[in-house]
Image (cartoon, rainbow, N blue to C red; front, side):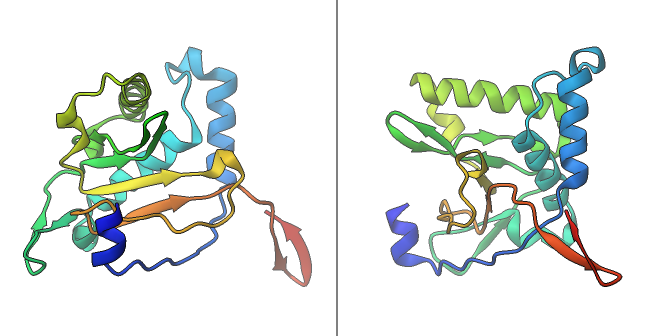
Length: 178
């Protein structure tokens, strides 16, 4: 990561997103997840699922890629190998969910939970710490409202997810929370 900070341009764009629908979906999974076969689905699972599906689109190929060491050559991926930042007692680790764009939400969730457990327990296979094409770093559960995530080279991008904050918007001259 230090190499990323010293050799790559770090650029952060902060954009708010209305996550009302995602919160409704998460609430449904909390209330009826077991009956639906979708127990223990987290907001982060839903976000990673959406990111994997988005990155699989041709118009986002530059973000589903690696910049090769020569700094001039791009390696584009046919599948999304999604990195997920995991805090561990030994520091940050970024395991890879290979073929994340082909997994169901439940499969992605189960894979993410197992990778996080293996990272935190120190039993992660080193092969699962490489080969990512893009990373999601989520500090929302810590209440963080803005941060600059550090790109995991040779990846070309990272999504930093922050806390859910109630905001207001103008709807017909009225301030409406969302």
